Image 1 (tube, one colour):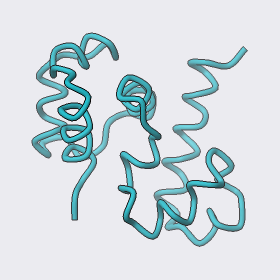
Image 2 (image 1 turned 180 degrees about the vertical axis):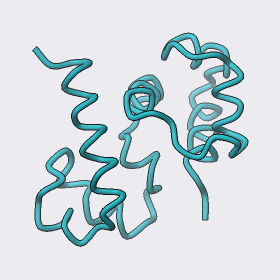
Image 3 (image 1 turned 90 degrees about the vertical axis):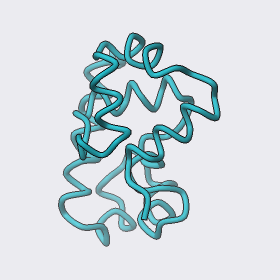
Image 4 (image 1 turned 30 degrees about the vertical axis):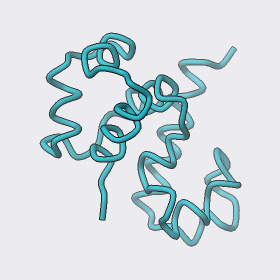
Length: 111
């Protein structure tokens, strides 16, 4: 099963974005991106995950779960409503993660 780092790396390469360009765009070091992609960092902070997804032009839920996962199919239409019925079937740790992502999104891009 692919992890977040593998998905970030694949999408970044597909979009022809360098590690350093992605790092600079989201405000972290190239080393941080390299560690994420290599699996040395399992889960980025919620605000970084949002910025990575935005920079790569993808959905943060896709980065966390992958498009082929049951979780992705269950919650993709409910995003960002993590309290929707589809979201309740999700593991608690993932509901909490999505709630943090949603709050970070509001802090970053809200009014």
